[in-house]
Image (cartoon, rainbow, N blue to C red; front, side):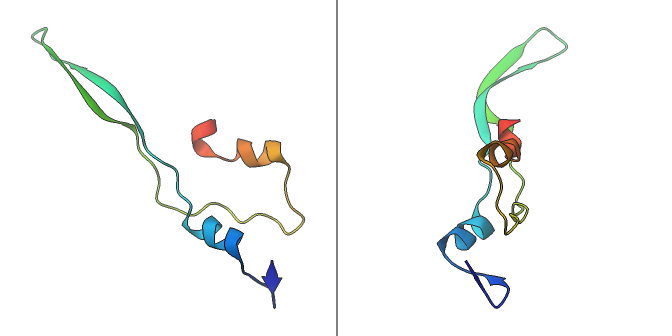
Length: 72
C-alpha cells in the first residue's frame, strides 16, 4: 500500500524489519597435533541489512525465493 508515494502497511513494516537468520550446526576444528574439537556454533552468519524494495508492479514467487540469500 502506498500513500503519497510512501509505502505503508503491515507488509512494509515486515519488509523493513525482516532479517535472515544465522545457520547453526556442529563445527569441528582440527589442530596441527592431530587433536580436534567439535562444538555447536554459527556456521553461516546473517547480514543486518534490509531487503531490496519490491517494485510496485510486484514480482513472481520464483523471483521472490531467488532473492533470499540463504535459499541460494
